Length: 317
Image 1 (cartoon, rainbow, N blue to C red):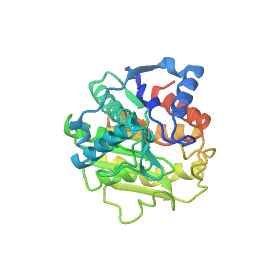
Image 2: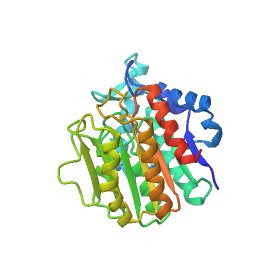
Image 3: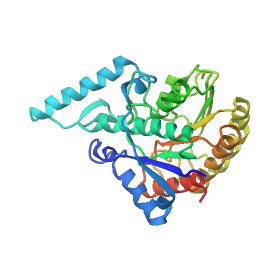
């Protein structure tokens, strides 16, 4: 039995937005510290994320968009050299420093490398402890703390580089993965299943979704038990009919009841249940092949405990 991979990179700690921003480096240090304290880290094959190539990013994003991000980075370098601010904003919630694009490129690279290793049989499955997150990054737009869409990049890599025919993307997060839907909607090689609080940022996912989307908008204060029932009722038949050859996960832990980014009511046992659900689908149809990428989760202790629950199921410990 191959191990569970755990991908990270030092650049993820160098990306930072304004002081007090919820998407902060401490998210990853909390995860790393907790996995060491609980012994879970000892069960993982820990690997350093390589940077994604332009060719890999261009499967999900336009050349114009990648060029605009690079131009913004160059302008920021010039502004800093002239004594200007150390951040450049893209929207009220999303900005770059001089390390952001390197971190985002390594985050997508983590997902691609994990995909390669899982398909090669080196790893049973993998979790990518990455930041910035990715699932709000659209083909041509950064938003919601996200710049490159790591799960979309990896899913398209599996399809186009490795020649898989069908992959599933499962997105559990308090926010709709609008960027992933923007990139993958209408691609019949992909089935995307998600739940998210609605109405809520980014106010999407309910207006005539494409046929390959299985979106479950839920109201504020929805409990984990209700989410489990919805997954069994709506996700399972779609996924079983689709028979994915690999499963990608946008793992957002901001649906935790302690996370004040949203108002959903999940707890660690619910994230463990979701992971068992995903493993069941992957074991039945995909040879167990799963690549999971961190998305949301903004209260460090709840995030760390939730990632532990997710990894214990992935690693079978």
